[in-house]
Length: 413
Ligand code: NAD
Ligand code: MG
Image (cartoon, rainbow, N blue to C red):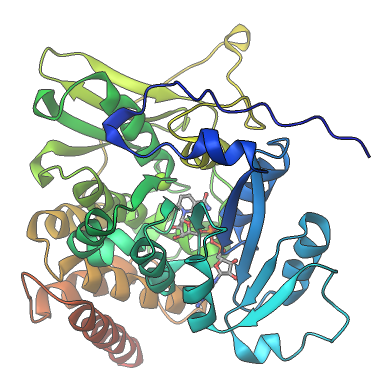
């Protein structure tokens, strides 16, 4: 099948924030090589749609998944990456000798993934593994000086200062995929850092935006997994229902944009069209709007500093558009306070909150914990931990394990 050559990125476009612009040269050499970590997930599959629609500007180089071997092999047959990585060795052992398409090699285990993300053929790494498991491969990509499109917010929640320092030392670039942070990244281009008075993250409010406090006590996993505006993986969908997702995003914004916690605010916006806003010193509020479709922030993080025509849905103002905003309710959604607190404290607070939450969400999905128990146990574990102001990665890993064990103990009692 004849294919039209990809339109080159404009070589002379300005590069904001002094970031290296490798897009022009690379797009002439057969596309920017993309490694998709967590390719079988919600963000991963949307990323493959963006790559497929790019007319060769992006070249699939590596796909990685944990246990979902069937979907990963199907992706390999369609997109023909040079590598597939299965991080779970037991799952990898089920792959037959003839299962891989010609031209695709298999690697097994998280160590292999760490090595392969640093390969010279990789220009962009999409970090879309879910949870704390995403930290190590993101760190490996930054150590290799790569440009990372970061969906795995847990990386910054757990180790924000360390990760930002590492990126600066290695000349690596972190670009947000989270829709709120993508919106903030875009809006921040309207002024200087000292002109910013407030960054306002929007939250859909999740499926229980109007639910009574009493009814939250008896919420089932099925009810909590029914998100009104976004289709996402199960962990982040539960986080959206408790609003812990917004708590994690406050911490993510704190480190990604180097903003003090008191400049960060949350507003509930049920339509999920305004993805976040920046208020400047003169009172101007700059927002980014688009339908709730992750393909847009994924593509923006891949094509930055340029913009491309792409597969994301578009707003149609002829159909009418209503935008509502309301303050969040801290009584029904106590997670938000924990996010503000952890963003203000820094140190080990984010890692402990994240680990406790991950374990609690797992327990809730398994029917071993009440919905309202998630924020309760997170508050206790956060409060009771041995805080450190400037932890190493080892300190973070140790406290991550400690926090999970605390939740396990709490559940079994
Ligand atoms: P998902 O559950 O749909 O997919 C997770 C992916 O990670 C899968 O490919 C899975 O194989 C892989 N994975 C799981 N455990 C792993 C492990 N231990 N080691 C290696 N790989 C592992 O998750 P998702 O909804 O796509 O979310 C991915 C990340 O993106 C999360 O950090 C989430 O917070 C963030 N994010 C997602 C959305 C969204 O719309 N889904 C939006 C913003 C941010
Ligand atoms: Mg988000």
